[in-house]
Length: 200
Length: 409
Image (cartoon, rainbow over all chains, first blue to last red; front, side):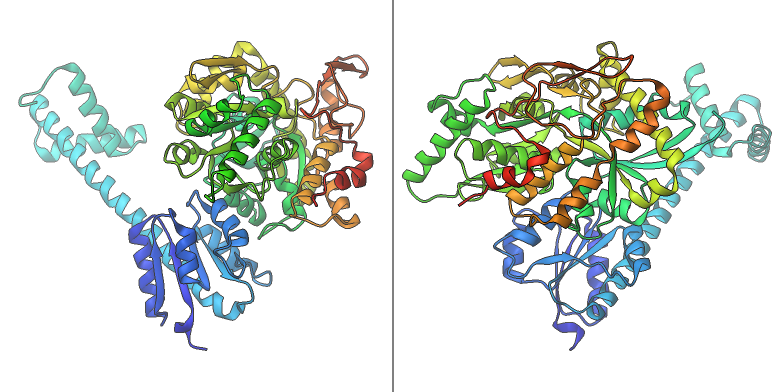
């Protein structure tokens, strides 16, 4: 059977991540993909869509509600259970590590699910990596700002050149076994306590 | 202590995680040579999955959850044992203001009396049915395999309300209960604190009865441990149980209430104000509409042998799983349920401390009408009262007749 004949529902409150998953599924040839960000009214949506596979992020606090509904709701014609391939423990661990789970309708062959789960795992991991890099870039920018301010304070109060001010910060950081940004932050805080600087 | 044991534990943001949280945060674990890493989770399903694949060694769990795992009722199930109970009681049943008005019109009073409240709710449900076809009242619990689900159903059934035919029961995560109630998505719920007091404080709900009055000194959350981990690390587990014992004693002491409320209020744990933690600690509940009641033994983290994993508690949960069609009653299933709670591990870990320990592994639930000192050499231990509100008794040696007596037509 073609990959495209499966109906897939993605439940993820994180819109960016959901669209990354959706794009991955479409690239893999799945045409019937629906993304839901909010679980309000989810039973009705499931009744309408009759999905074969449901992909849910593990951070979703409604997982207990969803699992119960998959089993019992009148809206669900065939029971839906978490996809657990006992012969492939590694992929289950990878899924939990990545923060994603897949639920499938009763009777669906695991060969058809495995590629979907694998894709979801790699996209979830890629998203986490991206989010982490973004966070690092953001804190890097913050660090640079605080180092610039600390340099300014040293230049003004001790009459140093920019280069000398930076060297002093770096040396202090090395001596104290701390990061330059931490030393810079301490200096900025202390300067703020000791008296307002011009223009602040 | 030189040996350092590393233990990773999961918990849900509920007040009854207090004994585990305090063990990590107040130094009890460190004193036993344990480095305890606490991980807050967002669903019981996550706790189950992370225990199963080994992210967590132990976790704060719903009392019936390790049974459900061991009996294969859940996906990604793993054999989970219970060497320690995190307390007795702590839940309430809360309804919307509209339902409360309807109940009050049928004789309910703000006194938490389960029989009276149940009779009023039953009358309200019959009145609604006569008035014409409409959606049934919808009640929420936190999980199908939870004390909440079973005690709500027990209460309704004992009051002549069929929990499957006369109302609808849905699952809602604890922190969302009060919101779902005020938005009208549900009409009532059974949940642990502080999520009942939260609805009362918001003016959107009324507490109608409490677990401690439905079945006094009844089991709630437990420590679930992956069986393979427990078997491979017996010393680590024993050290953890001693740390939890000291933590539970500290949590029970009224002197520490303020500090415990401050701890649990922190954003890493419940992230709710200190004042809203106090009803669980004092048993003094605001019911809504300026009514207040003090409930004896509302939540016990330590007293009345609260940490002892009674096999009769596990077996009662088992009978309710059978009662509500989650599981067939077979000798194999019964044997699994019987082996899940492990008083032997509790006893052997605490023996060196010389504290009072129950001599039996199971007891007849509902038999003690008053607080009763039980024999335990050199130390004092008081059990009960432990009555069910409808006067029923659960004898774990007579499971067949108990199950037969609860069968629906």
